[in-house]
Amino acid sequence: MLELRELVKHYNVGEGERVRAVDGLTMSVAAGELVALYGPSGSGKSTLLMLIAALLRPDGGTIRVGDREISSLSEHDGARYRLRDLGFIRQSVSLVPGVSALDNAALKLLGTDLNRRQAHRRVSPLLEQLGLGGRLHHCPDQLSMGERQRVMIARALSTGPKLVLADEPTGSLDSRRGREVLELLAAICHERLIPVLLVTHDPRAATFADRAHVLHDGRLVDHEPALDSALDSALDPVETR
Image (tube, rainbow, N blue to C red):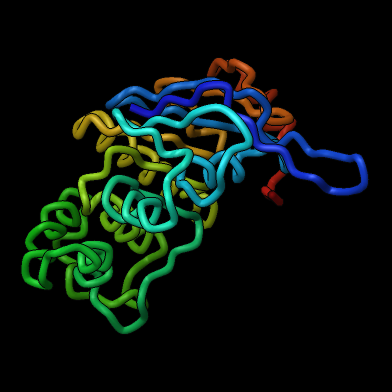
């Protein structure tokens, strides 16, 4: 479970001027729950993800993942948390060229105490579940964009994380492939009982999410899927912070 309590992160941007990137935010994501988070450019979405990933320290409040407080982890413990307990799926697909889907998906596990063969045994079932059973030995240039994103999802899930963060995972995909990725994320979240926080501009995400919220000026606004059309027209296409 992810639990945020009165989380605060402000930036000094000039003499006497502060930006409230995250401003007293309280929310939770339960095991097996997918929560979609929308927001216009500059609303604080990226800052929030960096706080949860222990890449930034908050100015106030707490962040708990499972039974662990992670907002004040040391640099070493933060790196270990990101390696073992956190799955992070980004919009940009960072696969190693000339390396098979199997090896790319196993990349994170090779930073643990598993050898290459053990890592392959761990990720092969994930890739098969994601529909890539026949593409294990294909290199990135032999895969579609949707297939490459699935390899990234397998990598994020390979360590059995306690939490998955997804940052615009459909942003570079066409409509059909974007829908497939959202369906897969929802199915895996529910099946494996992993909390997933999905940051997105994609209005389709609310259809697959258990809950959806809007972030404005670092604060949450409740949102119902029926408001998708109004929300979509209010969002900027690019996140700048």
